[in-house]
Amino acid sequence: MKVGLLYSRIRRDEKLLLTELRERGHEVEKIDVRAEQFNIAEPPESIDGVDLVVDRCLATSRSLYTTQFLDAYDIPVVNGAETADICADKVKNSLALERAGVPTPNTEIAYTVDSAMETIEEFGYPCVLKPVVGSWGRLMAKVETPSAAEAILEHKATLGHYQHKVFYVQEFVEKPGRDIRVLAVDGEPIAAMTRSSDHWLTNAAKGGTVEEFELDDRARELVAAASDAVGGGLLGVDLMETGSDYTVHEVNHTVEFKALNDAVDVDVPAAVVDWLESKAEQATGTEAAV
Amino acid sequence: MAATITAEDPLTGEEIEIPADVEVGEIVDSPATGAELEVVSVDPITLEEAPELEEDWGE
Image 1 (cartoon, each protein chain N blue to C red):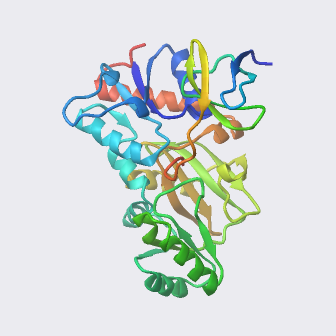
Image 2: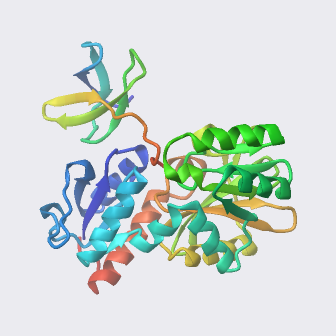
């Protein structure tokens, strides 16, 4: 098959994918989105003849628009525009999970400092303030006191971008010092790991330590439901253990997997490429030609 | 140890060693300054200072 890989940086994740694709004899067209133009009617030459595009854009804005253009050109892309649209926005993510009946932390948004303070007081301390767009745990705040809440809201209100004035308030989930990252393809887990830290943020990007995790049936059920809720694809589903159950706090659509690949016995890039081959096959209606 | 090649660090002007299998778009760390450098060409090998982290990056 011929795969187009949208990128702006080749991280170790992309390098693992590129190596696996090339070793299997697939043709790969690396498409640096920074150098491209996307016309509303005509696709760029760089995507001529590709069977499938893999979106690995680092910037959410580029990912959101480019996947929409690919949809318009009728070129199969993973993840699709709908999935990207839901996953890139924490509000849409939370709404989708709630609508699908997937346990997710209680969340409210408010548009002013006063109304956000009301929500925070109602949720009690600690609670969590998150940016509606963002990742790697940046600008997340665990709010422990009213005075801290007021200060954080005031700072957010002056950050400039309108999205920072959408105050996303979430209940604080007492997790056992770790959360669970599941890499899944259309709801089927490839592998899972725990991310542990003494810090309340356990993201691998924040330096949390990782360890392979064996999923039970309930976790698998929730991963499948969470994946369906956002439109499926190659996803990172984040769960927290709540004692008797799990809660899904987020589904990520341009998921990094290098830390997972190091932590587990599964050959993660091989499993991802297996899935890409099946997607290309579905899209073209033929065997993924090498 | 993996094979390496030398390239000029655009920030210091010094020759640095980077993995031989780098490709365009990859990021390497400058051994001298720790700065992130982007491979913008492999023939000849050319590095530039990588763009700053942006707000909507990563997952």
